[in-house]
Image (cartoon, rainbow, N blue to C red):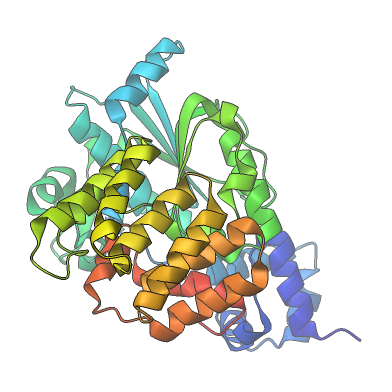
Length: 413
């Protein structure tokens, strides 16, 4: 007879796409206690099959296992790459006066409101021509999003000026989203694992943002969802994924060139001048920064030329080898990236960021065992105080990267 908890795990997977490894058993039991106090797994299965109240009980469990922490302008470096003027031009060329944006897996709404805020700042008109749809599978999360009331922690990364303009501070210290943003944002329920794409009644989008949601899905489903998100774009539209999502499935295998680019988080070349430098030689730092600036412009040859000039001075410059690996991986040459990243780790065995990127490269070439070893190395050598982790922290919380690695390895988070 099947274990009732295993049956609930499978039920959650079918309903939400979320894969709960055996190591998450304690967390699932805790979620069950919150969703149905005093009910054991077997009783929960009987109750959830009841046509009268089973759906509501299942929805409560979904709320418990899916709601994740988020915040305003989280991973700001990646959001700053959104070219709002170009999106508006493309929308108008397609016959629309409005940029259509979709925050998929929006949780309690901070990201959807952030997209509206950034668009309003970039397009300073009376009303920014932007329509932002936020979707999530959790009814509790969507209710919180519609309410739009947030505590200090959710707005901590938002500078005082836009915070004062777009949010109204309440007597209890919380912040309420103002009318200007509310006019641009709407919320509705959608299931990324089983729902139609785009959501029913929605036209195609100019921008789709889905960050750090797919890390909880099985890899086969990740590829399916990425394909579906891409098909939800207008021609020339942009899909933005989180850095942590990249290791759960290969965006390259899911790519459809006709659907517009996938933009996983990447380091911001302007921020490389300080994190990558270990000595005060500015010329070296500038060349490394120039390499990523060239990569951002899809000028792979110039990027690798800049890196080669650094390696000519020191063939075991770990930072230069890391940049070489990053550039070649994003250029679609994972085998070459593996070579460079292995050399980076030979030069600096504690370079956990290189280990994480090496795992991505191994995944891209289909070597799951080697990828696993690289992710294990990342977790083993992870040191948040390492200044090079600013490359991750400006794009995604390092905890998300660690959680993604653990999910990939089936470990207890």
